[in-house]
Length: 303
Image (cartoon, rainbow, N blue to C red; front, side):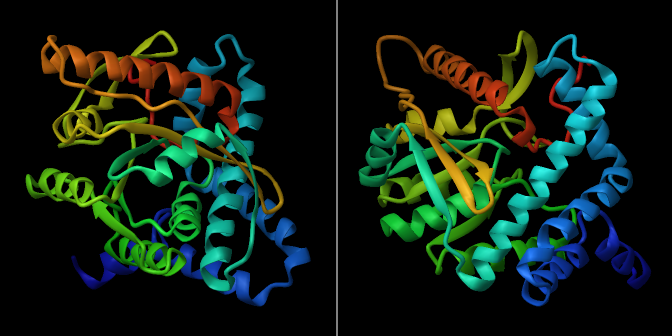
């Protein structure tokens, strides 16, 4: 990459400059001015990040069928506003170890996950998944291997890696979901060693294993890697989401585990059933918290 292209990538929507600017703002701007700053920066990015705005609108038309197009513009802005708060909170925890208040929904399943000797934490691009992983690792003294889609910008990826590892005191390790065949074996060994592997399962990226599924009555492509991994490792899958409710307040939503047990049926049938269970869980959580579904790419291609 040439120097000019590298410079441009720093200032692109997903570039590292904005992450560094956020870190600077959180350490130099008084906390009572933070809501004003986030409000106006959301307006700025609402117009600058046109592809992301269109993706949110596309997804909202399916999640909220028959919704008014003008109201959906306001809903798209609200989604980006919530996104701004969540990345600000994650940076705040990293830089100042700020404490956050939590309420639990499905506490018994969270306790099961914390006590599991190797498990898969299946989540979505919702709420504050980065902060949630760091707090979970710190609270329960568990190592988490977080699988993420590759960042478009290498400097942004490095910044996020360092942020997560710092926030989680070294207990959160990042692995990128690429076409490499080494990753599945790495994750399988981590589960067998008793670690928790965290994967986002609400959208499929190029070059990874995926298959058709139903979401809000539409056919979408979802990653099937978590379910194949669970089948081979015979490890439970725990759906878990962390939703922002107010200033420095979050709700952790844990759902019953999904199993991919070996049975008389073949592997494909077991994985298909588990994928349907995940789709139903995902629908319910997204429908109730659509303004915090930060899937900034179109999920429903037919639309």
